[in-house]
Length: 238
Length: 238
Image (cartoon, rainbow over all chains, first blue to last red; front, side, top):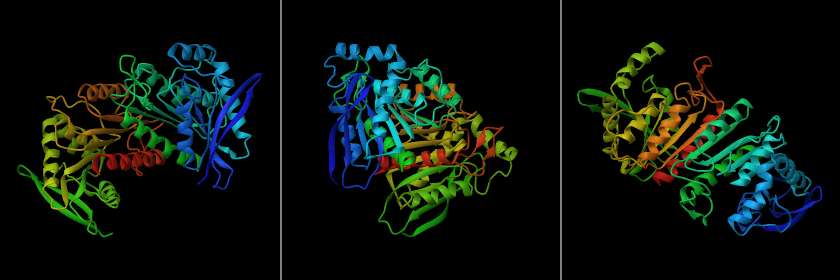
């Protein structure tokens, strides 16, 4: 096994973006690919670790960039400023993550017919919005993602969807869960939602330790959700 | 591997019951054990197949008997007559499934500290009620089970709980899902619920084909729920 890591520049119109690609060079390609969408902090070590870890399973993994080359937040206030334009303009969000998908599909290491998307928190919403945009994707996985509908005109969703959800997540309360269950059912999507009790936002992030804000790491929920991811990717990408 | 199958008589007071035990004789015991609780039809070929299949994973498996030796239904009407007394008297239900747990724990093949319970439809409720009774169990899994609270005084639930649920199951509508999430959260249980979209009651049963009644086999939901079971048992029984 020879995991290779590369930074890859790509564009959304005039905006230059920079993704982080990992793949096992010792495997015969092209490989099935997984896009990984970052939290509100931007493309950081957290998603790069996930990309590295998944690459060992034989996927070309791409930690994409929503914000622009080198743009990352270092405080909740900075993160909010970076994220807000996308939350206020879901068409921008959709275009931006579709640019990542196009970039990944064009990579020589990637089998463009076998691509899935996943994301964390804000990135979970980005992955869902990619699926909602009608993109050609095999699977979409949201980890403690925001679930709010995009408000954009509905496209035919082609992707299977797996939502991994902390039941006590203050950013995705039970009414949002009921709403997305209804949305995906009406859209005739093959969907699953795994809810973890006593689990809040950011449960996969070992650095999350703000109980008052409802952002807290959970080792069991991280392990269970990761196992669910691996099984789902096996199902949709092999 | 040498899977041995045995019929085991046990009792709840004066009532004689008959369970179906499977285990791999070539494994060194005592083995972790899994109780399997039947649907409203009674202990039949359906649960015996599950017992056999799980025994290959190294568990002593016991398809228990809620109704009494040889008592099985062969029509929805007969099944209803057999099930009703337990639905109307959840204390009877709880005592009856606790008798199975005691019988299993006394078996020489079984490590009494490592026992889990699972069940299908009515049996899912039985497994949940076993956990609700405060029984010493490592894990409880409900497949398309009824989720209604028992109405009995709350005992301290010692078991982790995994609920595998068809989101369109007419016997367990969204309000029941919200209610059990709240019940298990308040009881401080380590719980998970996996909801499958476009999936109704009986999704693990290849013979279920009544769309109007909301009882329909689903190959993807069966596969996904089985994988979730195997992973959960690994977590709680190893």
